[in-house]
Figure 1 (cartoon, helix red, strand yellow):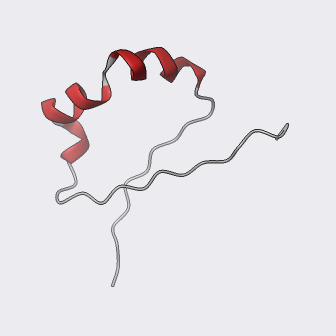
Figure 2: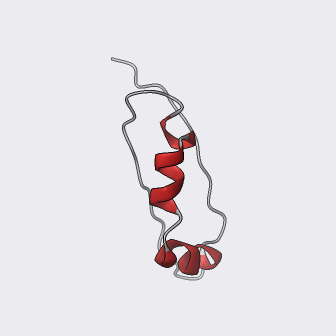
Length: 52
């Protein structure tokens, strides 16, 4: 992996479409995130259900 860090971010959503709302888009499209996002490599997003 060339010494690159492996990172994981986990979020707990109250509803499965929470990351597809106008509020989510406004929060994720800040000046900083728009500047840093092109530096991300091989990023993946998965939605999973927590089983108890």
